[in-house]
Length: 333
Image 1 (cartoon, one colour):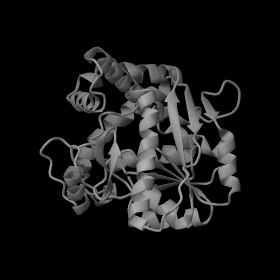
Image 2: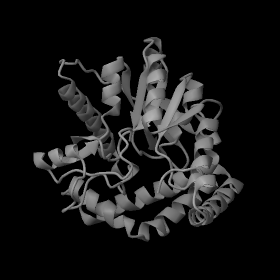
Image 3: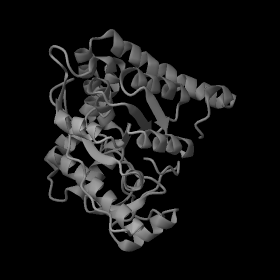
């Protein structure tokens, strides 16, 4: 289904999305009525006791078995349970994003390596802040106003247009003032911001139809080349930002050293090598605490999947367990 505005959708879709949105907003209203700690705890309870028993858990289990073949069943189940607890908390915390700005007394968010952010800003270059679905991934851009980082958040629109409008507003009200939807028009805006020395924030851990094959947990995964292409073309700084849930609704956000890379002049090879560095960095962080990552992504394909793109077929020929595809064809994933 296309991401058309609600008023341009057929009546049937408006009714369907309206019903979905009504349920979503009812939960957001409930979470907002509670304080942030109580809302987060309730979300965690729902995640552990309801969402964890849905069929999606099978995908998380399969991904963990492939990524950690030596992990025992008990440890794997514990990782999955904590993952669902974290996801439930993350959903509930959407109603309280304004509570997670850094600074002030008893801050809920600790920021590590702030000096690296200052150095990146002082370089005068555009900065590509990349990350994955770690802990509550919405917390990372929320820290940017207090850090003095100007720029935009790059996001994949939610299928439900009513929910998408609400979540986009929460992000821009509490983080970067601009949210850019993935696509050709968004890409032009990203170029403009980076050329102007601004920052963009992008999650890079989901599969993408027009990506390139790079190793991730020992298997080929179609990965967006966008950060690598932008960094090479514009000379932008490429910096990983990660998040960790410490206890309840408290977090540690960490800035990592910018990725060092010397181009060889072979554009395709450089893009692939730099994209692999991005995947390696994320994998290393996920391995430190695997329950903080969202293992329910279709990051890798099931046996028998047939890639639709040329790159996908090439990656499958390289070995591993193949590559995955997405329905939207976006290269900014």
